[in-house]
Length: 312
Image 1 (cartoon, rainbow, N blue to C red):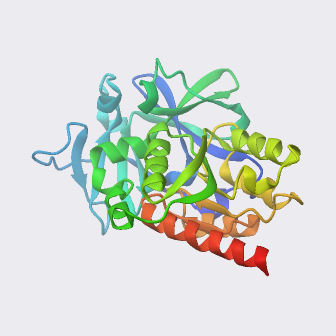
Image 2: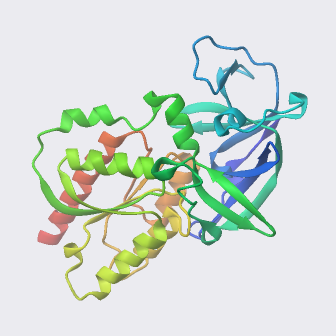
Image 3: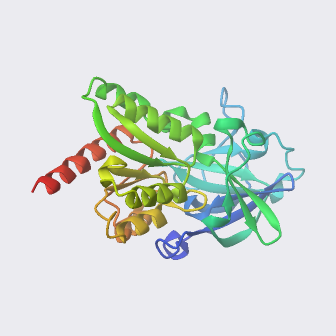
């Protein structure tokens, strides 16, 4: 059993780097952000569950909690392990739920810049709702970074974005405020945008990563127009190719023109350590990804506060 001390392994805030854990399935190399990993464990006996999702192998109880095991080989359509006695469980936490991803081996952990992450080809990785968020280039190999949030939401839709919570917000007054959304997951980006529109925030601009968000903000700043003609608030994921949300937040808050722009970190990675990092960088609010209604509430509060400060 290998516990990962995230407070030690997390990197300096805003450097646009992260730690990637490489693992293999059927001889192919994949990766996961270490910030998502609680621990790694040797494969052990699993109790099958009747009527479970086809890629759910079953459950096991290493200590006090029962953990669902997901067979990544089966999910990806790859060959199973010839000898499971050498296989590995990668234990993760998404939206306050623990999952064990069954892989065939763990290669190691390396530091890499988000600038070395390329957006995957949609044709190869499943179109607009594909299963990979990026391709990492490290030394002489390419590492596929899987969209673990998408995998989990497919298996347990109830822990994904709580879209039904938006039903209570239907009929709200339409807002002309401009919201910039930086989110690399195509599925989540679509859901977030649709939910904000239903909540009255119909002027949204969607970009795929922090670099595109920063380019948009720089163009807005240099246009000579009032900044509010282009953006009133930024909602950003943390984990994104090219530039992550922490680096984006740092750049915004260090810029003389943009620093008063409210920034919300909206990510499944929000935990105690990550919250401290976000606060150090000047994020105005942070909230875990399932809480879409909570996101709307934060947008309301920050925009109201911004208006009050401008009119003071």
